[in-house]
Length: 276
Image (cartoon, rainbow, N blue to C red; front, side, top):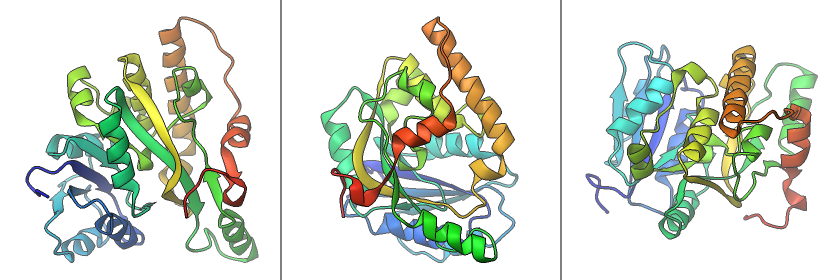
């Protein structure tokens, strides 16, 4: 293992993530695959996120701070520029990775050089009620039933018209592919910059893939960026789909979101391909 020349760079942008940050960091430090660096960029948080990160002494952690808030797309791009690894594992500051996530993704990427972005299935969880009262507790219980977001194994450009084909916080990127094809996050698509990244990768002739195993846990807490910026997300989502249609040179009927949910959301106990 080499901290200066690691196989994988784990990239976590942080903005006011103190309430969720420690479990996320530790889910990476406890990986079975050890040859990685963990880059954390505090994007001018106003809470004690920086202090939490500084409390760790693991040599694999590299901590950076922004004097002013860059925004999620610019923060992700800065982390990619700072990374040294062959592969870039993305995670948000409020989510968790299963212990074998990096090992299994690394093995797949080594065997499939045409794949530039690899995701996994992700299970939803809710650590605390997202709001007060009986309904908040009821929603927490519902989310914690074991719902899994099941993404297709080899999503193509047509699949992207049905929504983002990869759960971004589960993804691993091939750094050489991004550099060769000049692919980066575009802030004009925020907060759907991750969805647009999939579009860019496919447009440049690279492939997307998903490991059909639960190796990632999405923390639903009611303050998720996609929820608090819902209108901006809808507009950005439409913009990405419009660009995909231009790329295909045809008209296409957008699938309603409830149809996407019916296709992809499953209870874990009813799945054949999953890991415990």
